[in-house]
Length: 301
Image 1 (tube, one colour):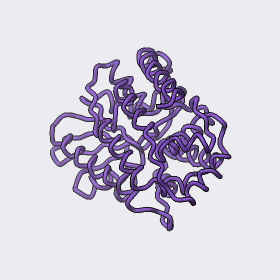
Image 2 (cartoon, rainbow, N blue to C red):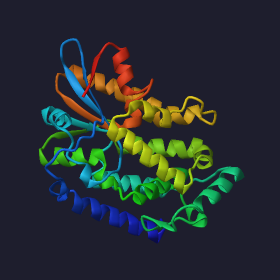
Image 3 (cartoon, one colour):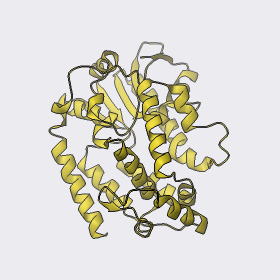
Image 4 (cartoon, rainbow, N blue to C red):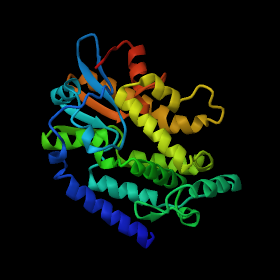
């Protein structure tokens, strides 16, 4: 593990330890009017849960949300997320997985990486973004670093992502947190993607300008609750470059698992508030449409 990576790991651990205790005081008291992508899902007996589509970064001015969203969270017995991003153990596991190098890709993929890397800032999160330095990391890490650069450009931070906001609330209110996937699953997934789809990921990296633009649009669509526009940008109908295996592993198979868990949560009689990436909630193979097709009543909040 490189010295620069060790420094980043230590800084990340300290950051999560310090921020986790104080961030709640930074939120305002006046609700914002963001519509969001939020649903109530119930069975024929009236047992129900709530599903919220999220973005994993943001800014403090976004919170708190409107009353319907906040009340749904307050009513719930459990808060369910993909992974508890405030857990120090999870952060360490994720960072170590990101350090694994496995960049066995084609010359075309490397050429595209070199071209794209030249459009990015020289450093992101204290790591050098030069082509030569990026070769020290796996494809998933490179993709993540470029995403971080786009987020930073807009002044956003993962510390103010929607999940983080509700995780912070859950911990302050002693609401039990449930991980729908957890760190082991996500690390295994990361390694699977690096092994099978590294070439695909590198060949489809966006330039800095395009990455910022795409992230900005997706963020606004989520905040506005604009499901159709979000579907069009995330799952374009005429995407001939799409690698089905990658999308199955990264999105659709996970949607299926989350849908089955949601059904278990509803049947338990307890009320769950689920907050997962908006890409898992929307679309033909998203959680909401699957539940609706299986006979559950779905109401937009």
